[in-house]
Length: 247
Image (tube, rainbow, N blue to C red; front, side, top):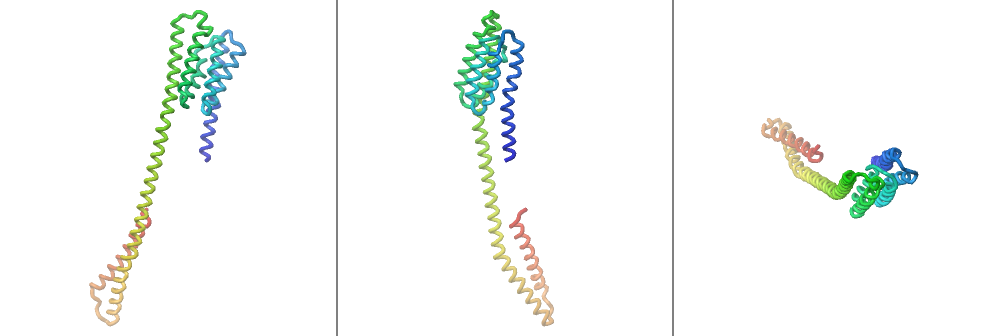
């Protein structure tokens, strides 16, 4: 339970740190760019903070970040870093199975943002515009593909865990059946061999006692039977102990 709480705590901390990690470079770039105002700052902050819900509700940051960053790009000159919140939200949406909406958000941002931004309209050379748009397109495709791969990988991992649990259950069942079989053999040995060897030992002991009582010489074969039956009883006890506890 403590490990689960610790894992959830780290996950929540990561979800809270992600918007901060995205917002810091965006705000720094915004302060270095000319022509920005409070609207751009609000769009950057709100678009970054929306990423806190990227795991629990991925469609919310997808909508918010796309709208906010699109408004920022259309209002003031912005660098490639302005696409970072949208990239993260596209990854989160694709990871959650909303590939169509993620692709639509990427198309809307790339189609309306870089093409209609003040930087593009102010007369930047065409090859710079095409190069930056192509770079962003590659990033968006990569983010979507990574999200899809992670989503497809989950069932494989879940199936592998289920197979591992099933294998452990089979091993436990086989171990239980083996233990049960050992106990059954031990009981049979105890009820059959022990009784037979005990009878032999008792009869040999009585014969030895009667021979000595009459002053006769005890036959060596009789003494060997008595000693062998005692050894057999001890060996049987050791074998029975091993069968009950193989460790």
